[in-house]
Amino acid sequence: MTGDLRFSSQRAHGWGPGSGSSPEARLRQRLPTLDDVEHQARRRIPRFAFDFLEGGTGGDLNTRRNREALDAVELVPRYSSPAPVQTEIELFGVRCAAPIGISPVGVDGIVWPGATRMLASAAGKARIPYIAGTLATAEIEEVAELAGPYAWFQLYGLPADDHAVTFDLIKRAGGSGVRVLAATLDAPVRSKRPRDLRNGLVVPFRPTPKTILDVALSPAWLLALATAGTPAFRNVERYVEKPATLANTAGFVQSQIKGTFSWETVRRMRDAWPGALVVKGVMHPDDAEQAISLGVDGILVSNHGGRQFDAAPAAIDVLPAIVARVGSRATILFDSGIRSGLDIARAVALGARGTFAGRALLLGLGALGERGAAYVAELLKEELETAMGQLGAHSLDALTQLTCRHQRAFDFCLTVRDAAGDGR
Ligand SMILES: Cc1cc2nc3c(=O)[nH]c(=O)nc-3n(C[C@H](O)[C@H](O)[C@H](O)COP(=O)(O)O)c2cc1C
Image (cartoon, rainbow, N blue to C red):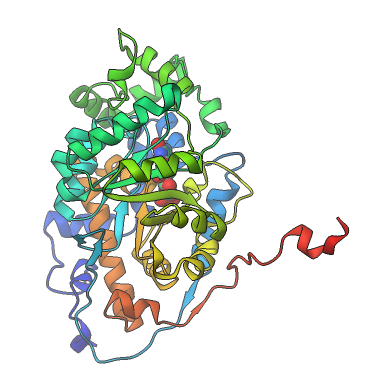
């Protein structure tokens, strides 16, 4: 066995020369998986903020379905001559360390104060893309400075005045050097998130004795809050009527921001944006087709991490049909449910060129503070390397050649109307 212990991942997992009693090695032993990171984060983040991050919509069915579906994807190992594993990938002209990026998480500063800046600098250092949100807690200009070529920008629509603010945000992103714009399509209505309602996490936010107690019991979070300041919707503050207090800005966000775009607006964005344009939240091959006809460069297959619609399929279950339809006409990206390097291997094997995770990276911040994002990014990369080594797939391309069993893959052939013939 020793002859095969040549991957960096094996060092990280305590097999090789990297294991020992250094603080880093002890951390690897204490938090070897994302489940351990999550467990630690749960103890350090106030309950309402943890629920905000973890919760899905309705009964959390879609969030659970994402997980179960990823777990059910089987990959068959092949044997080949041992060789170093290569995880680097080029996405829209930028060479990235691995096919893993950070999904946008609005108001991430609730989960961990200062999160947007921390994620941006972790992405820049780890050389992985970070899609900063319209509702991020630092401005896109600052994110672009910290993440450099790895900064992407997620856009929600602000339709008032013929999308004047939407197009100003696009201009600002371009002006600060961002090359990839991801327009979110999949939140056309405000979804019902019972955990947030029960915790009183609504606009306007009024702390209850319970939330105050939650915060008091979370000293590390409080310290982060004292350092970073109260989380605010920094990207949109300048558009809010003065004074742009948190309450006014939250009201503006609530009333002005729409979580989707018409296809006509996507077309206008295509005309206005010279960089790569991605649509986020695609779950049907016909929608992918429509987006491609408007000239988008990337399709991010996603169900918003199960936060929008409980009856939606797992995102991984619709991925193969979308890959099959799109072929090489656009770059296929994937998120929703990624919690390990093995999950990344599964999604790449099923045709995603890049994958993203939202909750995983924020759990890292919750567990370890600022260094937690880099810790989770590295953990995912090492697990991916281990999975690839075990599968005999030394390149990302080789992953796509593997035999997979994906019994739950969604069948788009039939609608109820088709099944019933023309009698309905
Ligand atoms: C707390 C939270 C807030 C989110 N806010 C946004 C957002 O503002 N814009 C957006 O496009 N997606 C948003 N998402 C969805 C993520 O971008 C991503 O699609 C999802 O988290 C992926 O699932 P995962 O968390 O299982 O990795 C949010 C997700 C979470 C968990």
